[in-house]
Image (cartoon, rainbow, N blue to C red; front, side, top):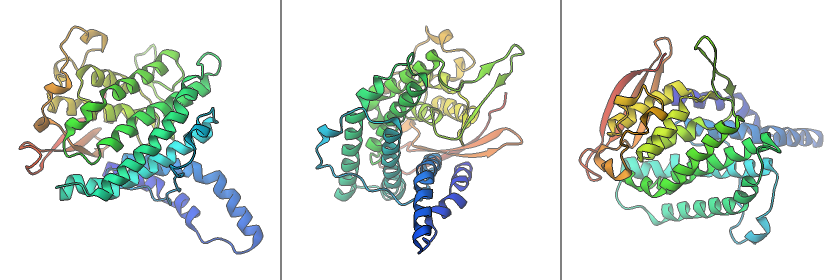
Length: 346
C-alpha cells in the first residue's frame, strides 16, 4: 500500500539507531546522548509524518512524557523559540497519532458501540494539552511579521496550520458520524486562510509556471501544507472552503511522501462521491467558479460521506487505486467499501 511505503522509509535504520543498547562507558554514554539530542527531534518529525501518511501505523519512537496539566500555565504564555514550539507540537501530534492508531480507530471502525470512559478521558487530556500549547503559542506565532522576518513567519504559520489540522483529527477521532467535523468549520476556514497567506507573501515552495507551460516543483522532507489541505478537502464539507483547499493543493510542491498531484485527484473524487459538485467545474480555476452554487455542510448527508480513504499507487501508469468506506445505511449499518482507479497524470 502507498501509505505503508511511506512508513517504511521512516521506520528503518534511523529509528533503530535511537533504540540501540547504550554504550556502558562514560564516553559512549556522552556520545550517544549528544547524538540523540541532535537526531531525535529530526527523526521524530519523520516518524510523525509516516504515521500521518499511513492509516494504521502509530509512531514508533517512544512517546515523550507530557508536562503535568497542574503546572502554572500562565508562566508558559511567553514568546518561546520557534524550535521549542515546533518540538512541543510534534510531541503532542505523536501522542494524538498513537491514540488514534492504537485505540480510536479500533473503536470507531471495528468494535463500535459506546465509547469506553478511559478512551474519552485520554482524548480529553490530549485536548487539554493542545489547548495549553495553543494558548501559549498563538499570540507569539501570530506576531511574527512576514516583512521583518519572512523565514520565521513561514515556520510560525506552518505550525498554526498543523495545529488546526491535528485539532480536528483529535476532537473527531472517536465519533462515529462524519457530521461531527461540521462543528469545526471555523478551524478549517482559518487553516485555508493561513495557507492562502503563505501564497500571497510568496514565502513557501510553490509550483512555478514556466513560459513553456510546464511546472517546476521542489521537494521538502517534512510535512508542511499538503496534508492539512488534503485533510480539509476530505473532512470539511463546506463547498467553498474545501474547493479553496483543493485549488491550493493543486499548487503545492511535493513534501516528503505527500505528492500533491495524487492527493488532489483523490480529494477531487471524494468531493464528487459526496455530492460536492466538483466534476462539472473541476477544470476551472477557483475564480471562474465564484458564481457557481457551493453546498453547505448540511447539504452533504451523513450516508454519503466518506469515512476513510486508502491509496495504492501505480507510478508507471500514473494511476492510484482509491479505496473508501461509507455507511450507506447510517451509523448502525455495515461498511460499504468501494474501489476506483484514478488517473493523476497531466
